[in-house]
Amino acid sequence: MQNRTHIRFFVAFLSIKALCWTIVPALTRNILPLDTIEAIVWGASSNFGNGKHPPLSGWIAEFFYTASGYADFSQYLLSQLLILIGFVAVYFLGRLFLSRTESVIGSLILYCICFYNLTSPEYNVNVLEIAFWPITALVFFRAIRDNKLHQWLLLGVCAAVIMWTKYFGGLLLFTLFVYMLIDAKARSRFLAAGPYLAFALAGILYLPHIWWLHQHDYLPIFYAIGRAEKEEVFHLGIYLIKMLRLIPMIVGILLPSAIVLWFSCGMINGKLLWHRLRGKWYGSENGGKFLLTLLIVPLVVLQIMAIAGIGVRTMWYQPIFFSAGPLLICFFRPWIAQINWKRFAGSIICFALFYLGLFTTINLVHSSYRVHFQIDEYCRFFSEKIGDSDKKLILMGDYWCIGLLHCHLPEHPVAINAWDPAWEKDVDQAFQQLKEDKAVIVFVDNMLPLLKKFEQRYQLQIQPESRIFSGTAPFDKPDNVRLYYVVLTKENIK
Image (cartoon, rainbow, N blue to C red):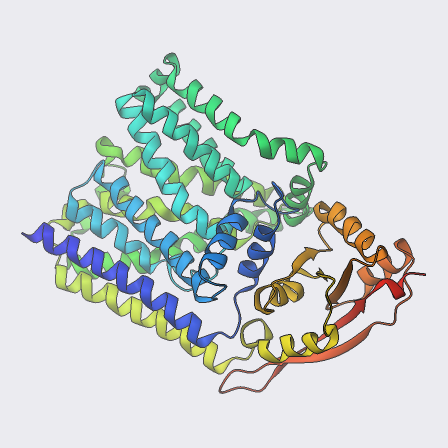
């Protein structure tokens, strides 16, 4: 009976959470988040890649956006559905080693981690990873445990999906490989055909993108290298700072979850806690090693990258902590049996209200043109500049500037991110159509260098103009941004 109550709370909480985090951003933001707009622009093209990531995130974003009739709320809903899938996948991952109630607690406790609440409205590749990483880990462990052909094939599909999502997914695959090396039972699977079939299937499914990478000189790989911001480590002090900064970050991320468990379980026996810290903790025989590997290996790899002078970004940690919930349950398992469910549920609800209130307050009292942009004025301004034309309308420039127009102009014109080298052929085709008087190009950007480059390359005769647009929160002064624009027709070609 208790199990049913806990499952009902689990389902109800996740449903209400998804609903609230869909409605509140839709009401407190004027426009979609930056990464979401970028994903929609990617998805509107038929390319098998772009200059930053594999194409899956864009395809999913564009599908939801068009299916909803170009409604912004669809992207918030999409993001919350993916987060919900992540919670459910973690629950089933926990069920491999824990009871129903323990698995519910291990999944819900993740809500205390900021990646599952404050950053969740912004649909991007990292949100997709929050859903796909635990699913892949779940399928992998079942394949190791049961060694059935269909499970290994399913693992191959999952491996391909996470690589179609983001190249960072390779870190999870490396982590699973490490586990196969350190666990005796998993290591024995190297003698079976399953792992090799999974690898072959993943490779076949990933082949179209590999071919696209080859055709485009591996542009996203070089982007990722540049994004990492290679730095020099000059002396021991900097080296030690890079080596040690991981610890407070992990503590800061996991501390709220640990506090909730401590509060819900009441007083914790210090002697038993010491045994847990010494490694004699429950779960080592029931998947604790697997859960610990899922968390530690990615963190160690990122720490090594940081020590090596690579600027590791916080967003890279977003999918990594999915195993932390069940892992904490394994750690606190002696006390979970005596957990006060009302305290636990109340704590989770309090955290939910706090995060939702914090998100709402920030959007109401802090102006940002990235959040409160006057989109109606923006679209009306450019509609007047374009006028009535039967020619094809092409948007070009910075993906945020043109993405807003692509999303909100009635005709949803083609948008080309002119800063992305992967779109170079699209840029050439667009200017060829301009030369043939078949298209009108609207160029919008927040700086001029790219336009000057095009002016020389395509023999253009132009005079760029600028306009200040703003975004204003209800209780703050406006935040302004100057955008440069030009409407190109055949007459602009020398």
